[in-house]
Length: 148
Image (tube, rainbow, N blue to C red):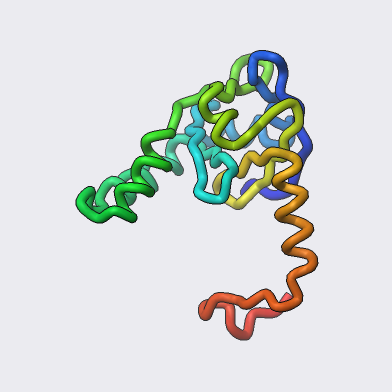
């Protein structure tokens, strides 16, 4: 279970070091084999490869004749890249994915259960400010009655 938010630095080659608290789990779960792809919200998604495969199968089962389905297939599967943690626990974010998510030197890695989101630091801050100030936030129907 991946959770928590960590600030990371990307080096000049576009590599980032996976936090040590997640490295062992990723080695056990997928031998460091991951899938990195774009997300409609402007961040990147990072999945252990075995977790990604059934998601990709579901996405590709959508009709390619439906415009919305095709857009989602192009975004998620069309931008998906296999990445591997190197011996130093780093992964390479390609130039094309860095451009899509507007990643530069600083990024935020956010655990989301079975996967991570990778955000441009400024975009992450803006999302958090919006979430914290949104008094009129409405919850989806499946969360009615939910309490913390």
